[in-house]
Length: 210
Image (cartoon, rainbow, N blue to C red):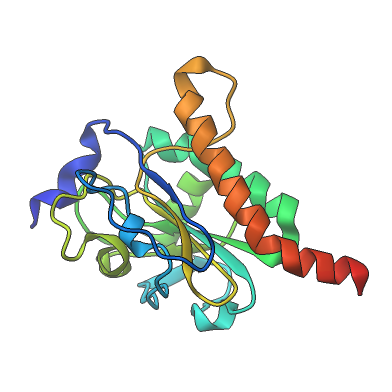
């Protein structure tokens, strides 16, 4: 078992990346959790173990929609504060945005029943589609492979209508907050909203104008 599978036990600086649409970013020097090098790249296809809630969907099936994918697990206080915020985003943007919660077991890959995953999701306040990444195959493909210095696994990716990664959060929490202690969480959430607004804007305008 690689050491990086045990990392979330201690807090670390959160990383968020916002890049101009249509342009790739250079890697952020000295920050293994930036994910800047992924902006502008096609999102890899996922190979989840199974779908716990919602129909089985491939990334190709969701082409034409904006997709926000968040890896989460139980006993994760960062997931507890972030998932309800993603639930609100889904309700706000309706059918144009698909939010997928990907459960990955910690501290190492192992099987977990659907009933247990659904119970934890209810406790965390998330009722959207859930996929199970038992062996971390898709998490490795998106985030960990070739990056032994990554410090987080509770990562998020915003994928545009053409299947291109436009925003990356390198782990931890992001949500609206007026608490000065969570100022960075609030700023990161605002960054997500800005990118999301840019991605959804043209389609929303076309719908209104007919």
